[in-house]
Structures are given as structure tokens and as C-alpha cells.
Image 1 (tube, helix red, strand yellow):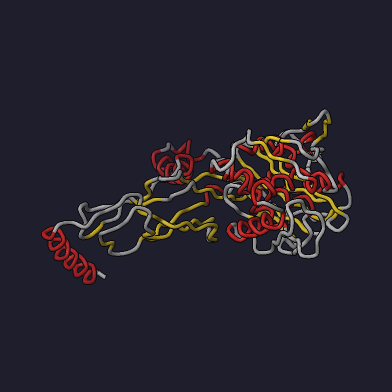
Image 2: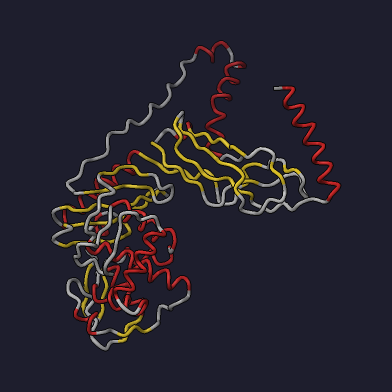
Length: 403
């Protein structure tokens, strides 16, 4: 099993110290040894002046703090994270282009609330509307894009809900692309954190928009309402929201030392409060936790025996990068166990699940990942299959006797 170099060294260190003590002189043996560094003591997560919140790592998906994270609440303009996500998805698939011109209807122009200030009859590039949705929370831009992509806000909301289901947002239902109040329009802190995670990881080429502090259109310059973009250099998105029913909300992401966190704070009392409460969550996560990349996508973790195939072994590994978020100063306690299916028999398709990897921190399971065949193994010829059948019989027989 391939283990990152840093983890291998830490696991070998106790063995090396024992070996050193066996060959050390009596004088060295009497030299006081340094005491091990004490583990970082992790306090309870902060309590916030908010209705609901969550903090998770964007790579590992581990939740570090939460409070009423599954409660259905009005999301206000946090809704536009899904609107923007669907625009980014269409851009990424090639169904639309950044310079496609979108006509502005009277309905889009008349939509109340925050605006990009597009005019009836304007032809506005998709890229400009996406900036208007993300940076200045333009309701008019959101309606214009909904009409362009789906023919209207109602069919667009249906698409939003389909993708919410696909992403696992089980406490979300959208009625419009803007977040303007409706009794059947709701989401949760956990669902919005999942959506933010997909925005960051699925379409990173568009994520730089979320960090921009200003946006100008038609001679009108407007600031991004995320105050943390000015206060904390590690914060680089995502979106604010406010209605009277929702209170002041903020979905934010920050990256420090290759660790990226996502926070969602809903239902605070002011713009300043949502910034301060978000900062508390992010500070807690970065101070007491770290995220380690254990394995790269496609890493070969084992090569178990295959019976009856055109080859005797198959490369087994993971089909995505494996990250684990752990308390600081405890990474040396990480261990991985591979549980590979017994008696693997050809044919085996590339990507076929052949086992499970379990990652532990001390005695506690902190993560599991499927083990997949990284290559196909075709069925061997008749003679090879017969030979392997006989060999497997005696192998199993001897194994049973030894047991």
C-alpha cells in the first residue's frame, strides 16, 4: 500500500528510535530524551448569534461545526448560488458561450430588489450577467439568465430543483432564481455548503468571479457585499443574502496553507454580524484542524491476485484524490486498512469496485473510500482458466489446513 512519504516517516520514527537506543553508548542512554509534543486541545465549536450555521472542509467534506444545519430556512439571495452554478454548468458544457447576447425582457427589468441595472431591450453578454449575479446579486440579471436558459423563471426553477436533488440537497426547494420571498422557497445551511463545494470543485475556472470586490455596468459601480473580502486575504467568495424573513446570511470560503473551508451562516442581525460570525467559524477551523492529502487519484494501493485472467494481478486504487481532515498534531495516528474482495475472478472491468479502504485516526474511523480496479483484466484462455482453477483449489486447501 502506498503511503505518503511524510506519513511513512512518522510511522517509522518510533522504530528508528528503538534501533538507535540499542546501539547507543551508556552515556547517550542516560541523556534526557525530549518529551513528546502534547496534542492540541480542541475546544467546543463557537456559538454564533445566528439561526443556523455549518463549517466544512471543501476537499474532505468533513463537517467541523454545525447548528441546526438541516433546518429549512429562507435563503434570500444565497439562492443565486444555484442560478450561477447552472450558468457555469452550461458554459462548461459548451451549450452557451460567454459572449452570447441575452435579451432583457420587461419582466427582468421590473424585478425588484438588488439590481445590475440592465435595461429593457438591452443585449447583454452571458459573462456580464454572470458577474452581475455573483458580485452585485442582480435580480434582474438572474431573471434574464433564467429566461435565456429555460424560457422563463418557473421552468428554470424546475431545473434548479432537479440539480438540487442530484447534488443531495435534501432540504431545498426553489421557486425562483432570485431568492425573493415565497413560502415554498427554502434551503438549509448544509445544503448550501454542498452547493458551494460543487461550485468550487466542479467549475474552478469560474470561481475567481466570486472574489471580485467591485462590478460596473452601464456606468454604475457597485461593491461586493461580502465584507470579508476586504478584511481577510484568505477569503475569496462566495455570496451574501438578505430579506426581512431570512435575516443577514453569508456563504463564505477561505484557503490557508492548502486547506479550504466553507462556512454558511444564516439568520444574523446585521451585515456586520454575518461577517463577524463567519470569521469566528473560519478561525476555529483553521486554528484546530488540518487537511491532509493521503492519496492521489489513480494511485496504485495494491495489486491483488486475479484468477482466470489474461494477467495474474490487477492494479487497485482510488478514482479521486483522498483527503482527510484531522485535529492538528495528530496526523501520525492516521492508518489505512484495505479490505479487498477475496478470490477476484476475471473478467474485471476498469472502475469495478473490488473492495473498501478504511481510514482511522487512532481507534476511530474517520473516512471510507471504495477501492476500484484501475485497469481491465480480460478472461484468460481455456488452458489458463483451467490451470488457475487447479492452483486456486490447492491454495484454498492449504490455507484451510493452516488455519
